[in-house]
Length: 405
Image (tube, rainbow, N blue to C red; front, side, top):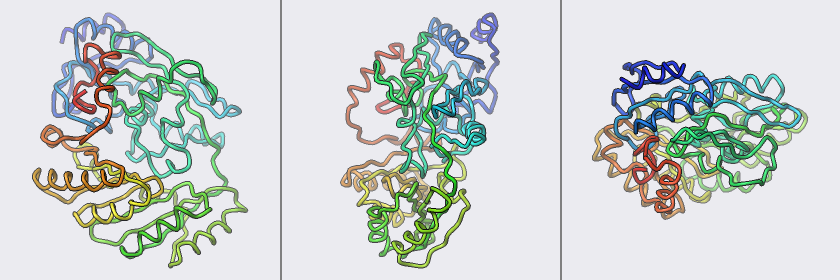
């Protein structure tokens, strides 16, 4: 508790943790609410001087991602660092604070006919949370992930040092690309406070073409669609536990060009299709409760998507994800830790044979403490050396990343 008056003396709002502030079921002694990079720096300097461990939160939608760590001493809440700092429509770039909700950013950008090409599989995500987890949705096929769109960052290291990487132009080759290293690191290396992205124009028209396929027709259908010349923005699959797979292709472009591409897509599907301009086609994670539910992330080579999806479905999972990039999310119907462990082991063997992996993306803390969240990972020694360089005191989100980093 003595950390709270110290932060107050620095002009930073802080309070004791409340029930909504639990981190991996741990109560948090102190929650700090900085409003700028300078205040984040001051918080981390104070925490470092006390050897206090820190977990970062935006809106808290993805705190159940990664391993379950020990009880933190400080929860660093970035929800008040939520400004759009700069938007240069002519240069197609935006610089934004990490606590800004992704949906709010998109709304502002859309007013200028632009967008950040990152979907929101978890509703309520902040920009910082999307970068920290590198979570992607359907448009990954067209625009890539946060790692591909990020061109600059401002970060604060565990000792309070502020660092910058990249710039405000799309092409920037000066110096080490710190930003790309931090994408997906779950807040274990540094605290991202600002991010600069390259943007894309909002297309004049966008429509989904979808069809329900019989399981034995899924592999040839996906093969045709993946090798077509239609240049889709997304190619998705949704296969409920008690149903047949639906395959959907998102076509975006000029108002004049879309009808012909839809006709070509229908010919490639070679089965009855539905054309829909409802862009809220169900592409969010197939779980109603990200904080307490269980969701797996399965990756594989493109040619194996149908096989992996079929195997997961046969094991009792609802499978949904990007058939065009080999990234699937799956929610099991398993009810016991033993069945989860067995199913995860089977999926890891299958995905490894197909050049991918099976990760326990999100689960209750008790489950994540019992099971190996990540599975076999290459380059662990390098990751540990990076952690030692960036955070020698092991103060930032300890235990959350690969290998207990």
